[in-house]
Length: 131
Image 1 (cartoon, rainbow, N blue to C red):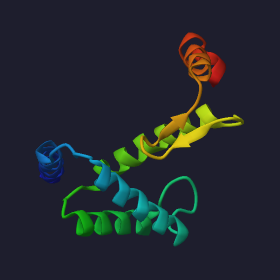
Image 2: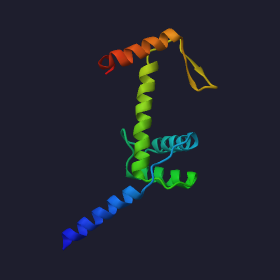
Image 3: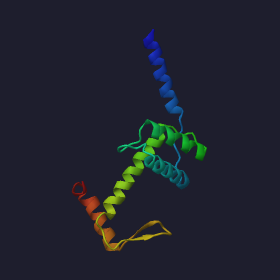
Image 4: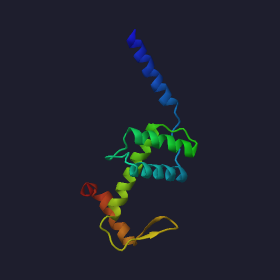
């Protein structure tokens, strides 16, 4: 009998996850998410590489209150993971580099074509050299 209850609640959880719509991220939503994450980090709710339970609870509530969306932990955690990967790529591109600029209009790195060619060749032709 208790197995039926467990299985039933597991099925409901799966159904709820399937019903949850895929998160749609735009620039404004991403900006709000990042600002909330920074505030929670500065508030001490990210003691290591991830938020603690209080931090995630605050991130979820604040994000949904501000954006009027209804994103859950999984959706926000996926965004966190994606942004972390983008940050790691960003830092690998510009770490220890000189002569780079920033284009505030395009919000991109300003570098010579030769610099980009070198980075693309290293990244895609010799990917193990970047690890």
